[in-house]
Image (cartoon, rainbow, N blue to C red):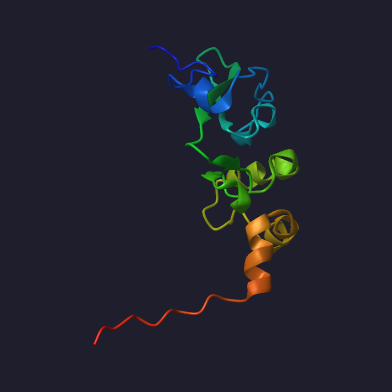
Length: 144
């Protein structure tokens, strides 16, 4: 069985990212989703630790490219529009959210109110939505 190599990205990735920097490495024993700040969060990595037959552990790294005009949002573990995401430079400050995924308890939310409050001032669109107030439903246009 062949393993997917780290930074094994789709053809044309360099058109979106430019010259791909390949220095990111999963921390030993790490599990979770990690924004690649050296590639402006256009790439993210999934780190997974497996136990080998001999009892040793191996940390596997799988690399993915976000779609055109999106970046990896370390707060939601998704690719988002940049204005809806934690700024890439702040992503490492949210790597701790992966710890919540490792709990293994479906009752433990991976985000709590404190996490959201910590991220809110950093996310452009959050501030715009709050200052504008809740959107009002539009009345349908009727011809007549």
